[in-house]
View 1 (cartoon, helix red, strand yellow):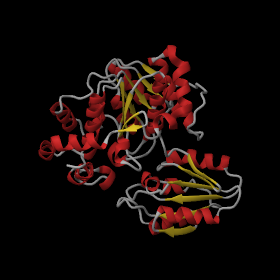
View 2 (cartoon, one colour):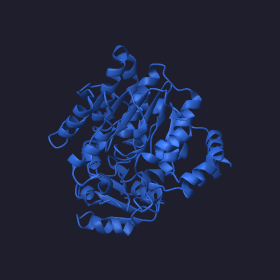
View 3 (spheres, helix red, strand yellow):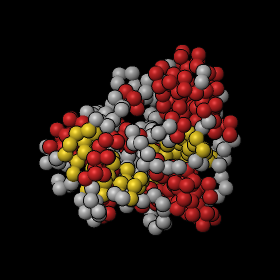
View 4 (tube, one colour):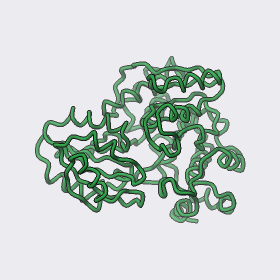
Length: 400
């Protein structure tokens, strides 16, 4: 197989949540990934690992930690999802993505067994990453959960430390309808005797973490304020910075001067993109993959703090998400550009516009993200701010 053929097979031949959403063939649980891992001779099992779960902030926290460790001279393999522009973003060492040659060889070598096993896209891509990290002999691995924690495929790992970023209402059909229940699912990554850092300490969710960590004899640490600078902008990043700092402080207390420097070089060290990332200054355009109510609570505040004129929101949404909780937070006086994307899970622009009108959010509909953004740029005046957000699919369709 060529690289292109290998990636196409992964997309087409197995259950894929990013492509299909929560369809009936979506797989969740640990038996499948555990058996797959053992079939592959447990790649990465001897490499120290950090395991990260949470509703929002997983990607930022993952790359903050990876950048900090890179400044310490460590080679860190990062498995994260979803990717935005290139499939190979799912497995990185620093800013280096997994090679096309490795992907093609690995899939070709095992494709017959994969056909028989019927593992999911997420399970296979995780094992692809772990196999590459083993091949490259990295010093550490950071595994970011895809969804939840307790039954997430990444939960087969035996980490040195766990991090839980925050708890919001997302994927309720799989994780539960309230934050307390969802917290219990995220707390499922806590392992016996393994330290866990939890970023949020609030009345609704804290007991879930206290109960599970106590039952498993896992030292529980609540992240405190470190007040460290970072090149990841957006007020919401302070929570991710605190959680990442707490993890690194526990692992490497004598190296704070190095890992904290890494927080100011995240984009350079890891190629991280899509969290309040500026892509144009005249007019000012920022993009963010925020896609749920908890994320937009911060995005709306950030936009208000930065905008000196009028706000322009280029928005798309996944069809299987209740976007009303997002839209009701948005300012009525802003301009809106409702867009579809190339992903078949995306809500059509007219559907999103219809929901927006219920909250007195008026705008125009566009077939694609780039035409919507171009219209916003034409309409924007000096001091205005354009925000492109609502879904990973929206950001992934940008032509940069």
